Length: 307
Image (cartoon, rainbow, N blue to C red):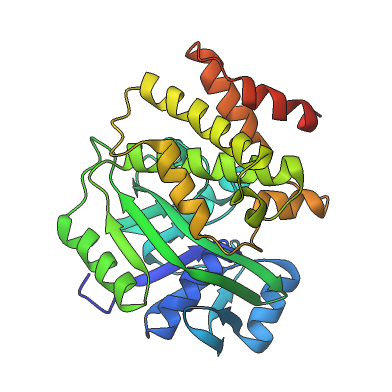
């Protein structure tokens, strides 16, 4: 896997996957996208259209296939589907992997790497998380807002992967304008991301407001703080060694977001689409209950979303 020759496969070309694909493609990296439906048709016809606060306006010719059509091999597979779609791409991972392939799930839900590893035991699965505001703004069109595009990835304890592979991926991402970090404790970092995105998405959806409302003192921000505090208590009980106070960290991240931005879960709910409410709300509650953690704020907001 010499540098500049890594073949990247992006499974799920939504806001996150589409942004990764676009930035890699702009830097001349070898990228193939997996998409479906009208989004796929538009990618094939016009290329990937990017509106980016970091990169400007671009239309990028990009290879795009359905999961079923793709027959190539990839060195790196970024899994960027929603949590409820993970099982649907296991066949794609098995088919597209060679002996040195690494799979990097970039999902909002904690525990995804180990879950995928159980589904594809013969493939090396890492874990990862991303900080970005990116969304599908039209067919074949991705919008990336704000100045934050940070991707953290690494291997769980017991997963062996050559350091050189991790560093080559890091170099490719950094050359593409993505702030890439190799995590020494990916279990912690994916939990921290889950805590943040859960509090952000649940608060936004509960009050039906953009992030600007969470940035102002008052009830909305207090709910965000309550949710962050409760997930921090869960993390502590799970033995996660936090580098800094999660509540302060979550507030720091939320205050840097574009005031007009909303979480993808909130967008999906507003459109009546399937959403990540299970992984971001009910899974958090279930994990807390299992550990005997009191979560009054989570219980309060869950009342609104019970099916």
